[in-house]
Length: 449
Image (cartoon, rainbow, N blue to C red; front, top):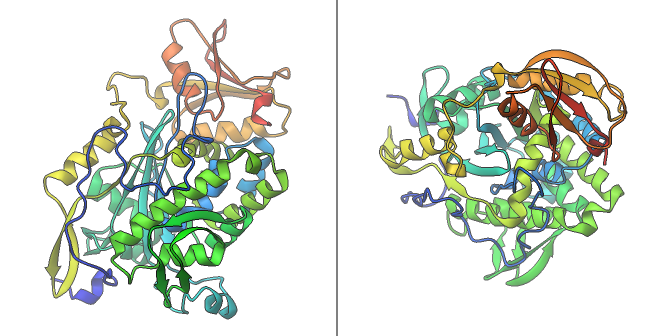
């Protein structure tokens, strides 16, 4: 048995049983704040229906970047702002798509003045302070949070807290550990840096929250009265960090509420038509995120469509766990009954209300030609690279006549393959049966708007 210090730092708060998830479609893990405007920016017209998301504080830069879901120019700009890292063990095929979102407690890149201003202190263990998986298919999504004190077997065979996996072997180790624990394949990973949170909130002009009770915590640097108020970046960071007033689980709930309010603010029409503000958001969000290498512009847009429903609320879950003590350390163990049931619901897609069909066509079964009808130089090549990384075969890459709308053309008898490809594209796509040799994606000018 390992010593307690090998587990990673202890999570503050009560060691109580976690809330039990309900596996009914549409349940939510936290009450949305009164300021959340449900439904704004959260619906898509056409074949695929609505998107969905919700939770946790330091993913805020990522959400603000992705929830906008705008055209090629902004996506290319935002993509260029991202740092990228090689990550081992990522899946290339299968559905639903699972994205690992990580919030680190690292203070790297913060000046001493910024540390003092935001009352973050100077010490950070570079641990995974927030760990969650966004799962989505078509327009449906759900979010699963992994408590940072979860006692697991990590990638190197050591036992301890899951939040220390990044210290053992970086993001690749955390991907491997989560797959070991849950059986969930991970397709993309994104780590959000501490400082980007403040910048994103300020870029959007602050976020309104309505508090039932005042919150005061000198360690988090906040003194907020009860009632409705607009939080700037510094106060928002304090709000999602505070936990001394209750527990880490209370903090998670506050983070969920804040992100729903932020998404509602970003999705407001007055934000979406303010182009300078959108580019400030893209810059702040992009510079706050380190993504896996193959998360390019199309992947960002695809993930963004899965996230847009956050403004309207989305089902969120926490891994069911029970408190226990190991080597004198308080940790959490996955509940033997409810944990496997929840993991299976995520693996199969049942959590989204769309159980996977074992006979459905898979990405690796589909060869695709990608043609550029959008007039954006290099777009077809970039999209082909991303589709290849997701498991599709690429038969051809080239140009087409300019077309206003993105189209998927398919040979007779390959409608299912065409629908699978269309579900990967972040705009509503017209399907056409045509005399083509393989399923053909013609990128249209609607990807620019």
